[in-house]
Length: 220
Length: 250
Image (cartoon, each protein chain N blue to C red):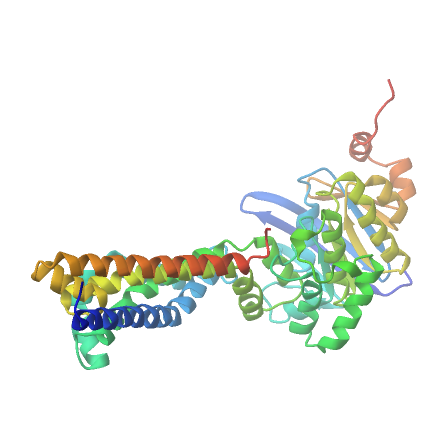
């Protein structure tokens, strides 16, 4: 149905899409995980309530999250150019993806940690565990199913966002869909990219959920 | 008892939650090996009092000393003090994602920096003593309430605390499981452990206590030996409280 060139292009598209999704999820967590921990620890019922730190974190989180990704993508072009040297292509897309996902991830992490039973945290406190010990050995361990599920959902979200970056020359399957489907009216290629995106999404979601049930010791 | 060493000293503590006064002018001295049972109607401040003792709750006024060291949740050495006070909660609060053995050895290894092998050996011995050797690789959800509570007691004991606090540890259990937990506590009583026990199990209280403290409305209303308290309480309030546990035959 497609010639060799088109198939190659689609394969590169898949590779680029996975590259953007995985790398940006990773760096999103590098920023978002500590951010989320800070939000959890400084909240009113946290280990070290601090209204100022929580207030600032909360505010920053909401501001970034309220900017639509497409606009953030354009807003961040100068910064992206500064970081990776150019503003187009899949590597460049990772920058806005990370900036956009970090506060989202922080929220997801915060709410996962908030779910950890207070009694369990109190038990750890009563045994003389310090704040860092509670964070790393109790909070993160006990919230792991929820944290992992959150990561799966985030990866799915970034897969979608990476495709959106195709509108401004981002690379990957989204880029192909926009170029062929929107500019050239080649619906067949666009449909194939959409199907590929759906398959990738399904794989991420199902594999993720499979592992999340395997690490859950709370119920049968 | 008074010849024994003083372990815990509580001096005129008050606790207020915003406008609500929960504890008012509580003073108490606990000697080594003493078993104090605290009884009283719900909402009388029993749990809050226990939680103040290891700094889980900050007192509004007054002082608490463990071995002469002030217990203050905001001070740096609070983690060191808490290691000397074991606490067992009504809701067990085992770590759901850790096995029974991991639950027991976590704090000694992580907090007290003891050698894992040594801690493990002790954990196995203690778990055997409470009849749970076969459960070491299980997760908390696979255990009954009574079993979980026995694990929680072992988890407190392995820290080698000087004082043990029990906060209504049988209140959430089915009746047939209450006994197995109380038996473990009786065993600890025989070992002359220093314990403060909040409970509604009056027969147990009578059997195990050196002193019974009756709290009501945030005050210590009575502080007497169990025989005196259960047979001829000095106050009307205590008498009324005790009568709620009795039933007349038809």
